Image (tube, rainbow, N blue to C red):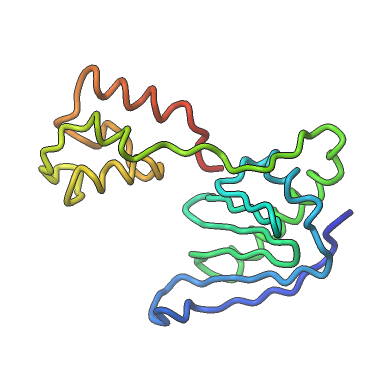
Length: 174
């Protein structure tokens, strides 16, 4: 077992203390640097840094980053949610490390949809029917997985199918 224990720190973001969401930093008692490329391979990290190693995941609307000696999690409802996520990550880190002989380590992030490729296929009317101010913002939301092509009423036919096919080649959030 690589990761045995950590100390959890829960806080409100300093940039806006009135936010309801909490952030969490887990200070790891063991260094998990060697497991990070295997964790990236098994969970499909969104971003990967090589030196020092770190991997970022987008999971259920949260951004989670694993560093050699800490794990950072944003947008938490409460401490109980932090505990569940940290225990899940502890299991995932240990499982990736235990199965490292079967896993090809991955030293890069998962490919992401390009906003401009999506925008090219949108009607560019800035009609707001999707609930967003512009087609550019809508394209960003599609690339992030927060909106789907069917959320754009004027988008139809071939272009809708092209966007669906394009975004379908990228992995979804865990």
